[in-house]
Each structure stands twice: as structure tokens, then as C-alpha cells.
Amino acid sequence: MPELPEVEITRRSFASRITGARIEQVRLGKPLRWPLGVEPGQLQGAQVLDVRRRGKYLLLDLTLPGAREGLLLMHLGMSGSLQFASRLGEPGKHDHFDLVTSQGALRLHDPRRFGAVVFAQGQDDPVAKKLLSTLGPEPWDGAGVLFDARLFHAALKKRSAAIKQVLLQGQAVVGVGNIYASEALFLAGIAPTCKAQKISFVRVQKLRDAIGQVLGQAISQGGSTLRDFRSADGQDGHFQESAQVYGREGQPCFVCGGQIRKITQGQRSTWFCPSCQRR
Ligand SMILES: [Zn+2]
Image (cartoon, rainbow, N blue to C red; front, top):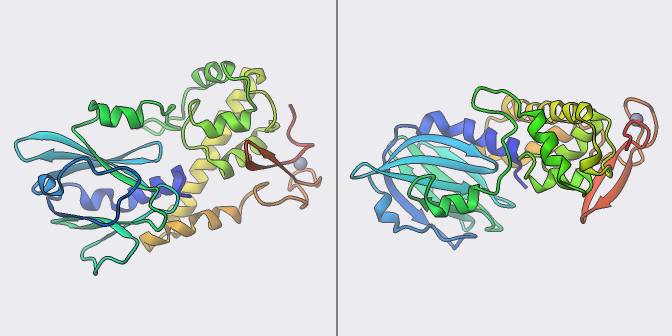
């Protein structure tokens, strides 16, 4: 499943190339998770102003003919990937959205069709608010500054569930998917079963820094190896090579030599080192 780092890598791979482009044609394939919400023809002539990211949504800011504001929210779902090329061939059976512009064409390839492309009349449109308003803070602000540890601590104080599950819920901070939650908790020395509300501020600060480190590493590794845009799918595998605990049950911990363990929390696997991570 594409996680925040893969979505950010995807964004960086085409944002500057599509910015300023005029939309010439929109082609829809089979239905995605949600309908587009606008007649494709109405997007013709719109200009792409910017490509932003919020959580795992890519946001294409548009100016529609008549200077009206528009926003395309794109989500890669479970199996989606985007390709941007100067020219696209005939769509395959899993290609369900093409945005043909004056600067190249963007195509969503999504075999499982849990992805979506949704139109809204700007970010204040209820359509956009419904999708974006439940998301927690971003790991970094626009200037690259990590999210606030005090707000993070306050958010965790309200949660009695295990920290691993609270991270996955994405309300204390977005983007910490299964692999990154296990890795960040290991780096911070916090047991995944620890109750979120019991973690001291000092340890919350460590966890905040660890989340920044793990997500930043995933983005830079993907960014340095990713040439073919579509290979964003393989990005997880590359990150796993440098994983400290993820997928390593029964193997020795790189820090203490003890055995890495695997447990199940909320139907998701968690990997951790029982001696390096404490409650
Ligand atoms: Zn250890």
C-alpha cells in the first residue's frame, strides 16, 4: 500500500512538470472508490497551479475557466500508482484516470480500484473538508520543521490505546503506516504495547524525532533510487533493506543482539525488540 513517503515521492516526481499546464482532456476508466463529482468536460481548459500533499492525498490546485477555483484530490488507495509522461499509450485495463495536459499526461493505474480522484470547488468545499478534516498534523510544515512535540504529547494524553495503534490511526500525526510505526517505536525505545497516554513528554519528543527520521529516510531512499515513476510500487522493498525490526522476527537486534519479536495488534503485525523497547 502506498504510504506517505511513497505519495510524497510521487508528488515530487511530477509536481514541477505539471505546474502551469492546461488540462486538455480527462478520461475515466472503471469506477474508482468515489465518483469524480464533475463532468470531465468541465475540467477542460483548467490550469494546474500547484501539486500539494495532505496526508496520503495529492491535491492539484486548479483555476477553472471563468477564474473559478478547483481542486482535484487524488488518493492511491491500496494499489494505485501515478505515471506522468509527455505522451501516454492506450490505457490498459487497470488505468482508470488520465489527465491529459499541455505539458504531459498523468495516469492513475490502480488494479484494486480503492484509489480515487475527486473534484472539489477548492479546499473549503464540503467535499474536500469531508476527506481532509479528520487528518492529524503533517509530520513537517511547509518549511520542513517537524511537528510540535507538545501538541503531539497532548494528543497522545487523550488516548488509552496502545501507542502503535494510535500512530496508525493518523489523528495524532499523519503518515506513520505499519512499517514506519514499528521502526519509529524501535528508534525511540518505546514498547508498541505502551499506552499512548502514559508516555512521558521526554519520550514523546524522542518518538517525534524518530518519526521524522524514519519518514525522512524513506523519502530520501525512494527519491534517490526512483527513476521510473511507476516503480513507486517497489519503494517499500527498498526501505525494508534498512529496517531495524520490520519483518525481522527471530533475528538478532542490531543494537542488543536479542531476538526481534512479532506480535499482532488490531489485526496488524508489529515487530519490536523486547529489551531495547520498554513500556
Ligand atoms: Zn534490542
